[in-house]
Length: 152
Image 1 (tube, rainbow, N blue to C red):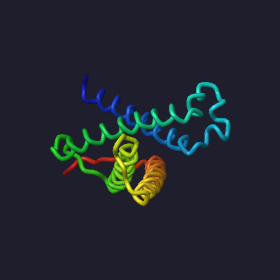
Image 2: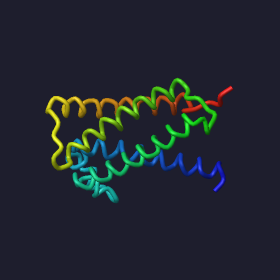
Image 3: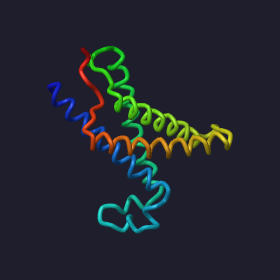
Image 4: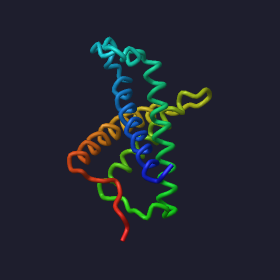
C-alpha cells in the first residue's frame, strides 16, 4: 500500500474508533435504554449494557494501539512532523482518557483491587477527559486545526 493509502485507512480507523468510543461511552451511563435509542433500527445492541461495554473496550483498544504506534513513530522522527497546539491538547486529553480507561478496565480482572477513592477519581477523570476530548475535537473540526505540521 502506498503511504497516502495507509494514512487514509489509518484516519478512517481512528475516526471510527473515536465515534464508537464516544457513542458507547455515553451508552454505558445507560442512556440508550432509558431514552429508547436501543429501539432504533440497527441500534438494538446499544441498549444491551454488556455488548456496549465490549464494543467500548474494542474501540478503546484500537485507539490505544494507534496511540502507541504514533507515539513511537513520532519520537523516532519517522514522520518529521510536529504536534500543533491543538494536537498537543487533543493528545493530552486522549492520553488521559485512555490511561484512566485502562485503570478502570483493570479493576474488572480477578484479584485486582483498587481503593474506592481511586476508582471514583478514575471514573470522573475518564468521563471528563472524554467529554473535553470530544469538545476539543469538535473545536478542531470547526477551526480546521490539524494534529501535525511539517517540521522546518
